[in-house]
Image 1 (cartoon, rainbow, N blue to C red):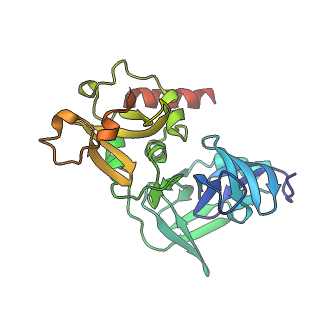
Image 2: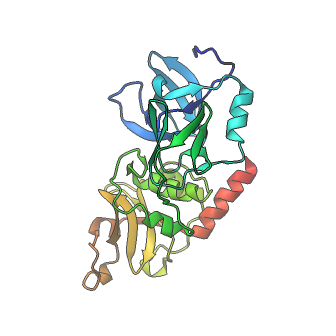
Image 3: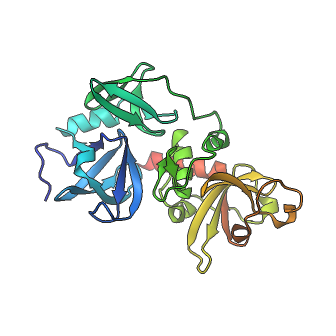
Length: 280
């Protein structure tokens, strides 16, 4: 049972990066993250934990009660989610302050930013230092800005990110909402007829299956010339075309070269996201 003084089961994140875990425990697997300003639906509360569904992508899990705040009313929730100036932060993670309180704004956090302060449902916060822009004009240019970010299972930010969180975040910064997991993304848009490397195009999204199964376990951006941009160890560029091993300066990933499972065009992914938005 949900026990809270508000009239809604909707909460927002008031902790820069909040882990969402598989079970109601600090030691449970982190399956994804909720970012400052994102909203969630609470289904039940158990001691220090809420079982939630992320409004953004429908992902489910458990979040600490200390990292979210209930909206007082449905009207407050609607006012925040429909705020005309609420957008995903296009900057590398930066700090905000209010009195003695400090907070971080990770890339992709849906907040209201006017250049001097940040507005959240609980009021205004001052920007500590002018943030550095991460988002670029084109999808791949934005993706390249993440180079060097460490891999983190369940991560979604420039502090740590996993392979599917990487794809999802880059597209969301360009206002295209994708599912969370690689297996869900694989089914989100139609696959190209060919998955041969010579038929791939710059900006395509490439999927890979596991070593011992056909389950989709990895995903990355295709950069042309046999190169893949992906989160593995950290966000990096590697080679997946064995024909270019002798001439490329990039490390050859033999495992991925043998496990290509499908390819989607950037155009088809955008079209699927637009269609989903129109249907919602």
